[in-house]
Length: 211
Image 1: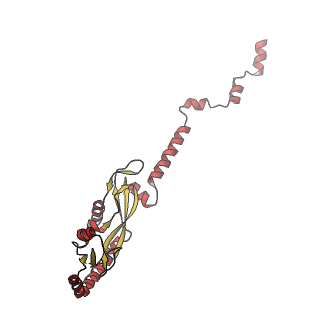
Image 2 (image 1 turned 45 degrees about the vertical axis):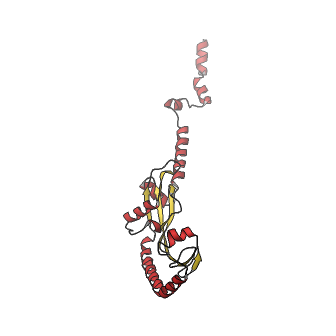
Image 3 (image 1 turned 120 degrees about the vertical axis):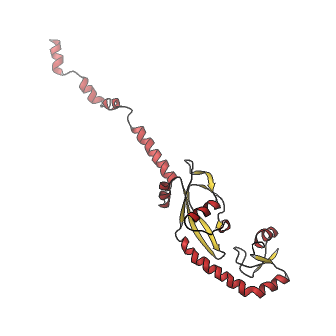
């Protein structure tokens, strides 16, 4: 379907561009959300008659979004989730989870469609998620998924908690393997040469026995 864009659409074009898109994309998203018009003669004339207002409204919304973008500078939200020892979550983190966490952190008024998450987050770690405040203003939010606040702080410092946990377990296993099972091991740890010398009778004692 041929359409006229009423705002910038990533990978398609800017305001006033006439482009061809799939019918489903136009009917299910662009047209009902007032992001485009069908490219017929009537709509072409309608667009040209209102181009100035459309561009002015877009500039105003862009300015508001740019001002709001400052609230996202260095923003990182922490989501505490249960996970296996391999870092896989028991469940996943969705767009709704991110929107709710941002709202709790004071960033309100975001719709789910504004958060760009290609697929649900299913593992521990740090993930950068894009938030589209305006078609021309996109910010990034850090999402820190951890099993505890302490692990979240470690991840924030750049530590891989799963690797760190594995290394700690390995170190404990080695330490346990090197520990004696009982105090008897310390008592029996006398070198063979010293033990033989202790057990050998003194020369004077041998001569006394013979007399």
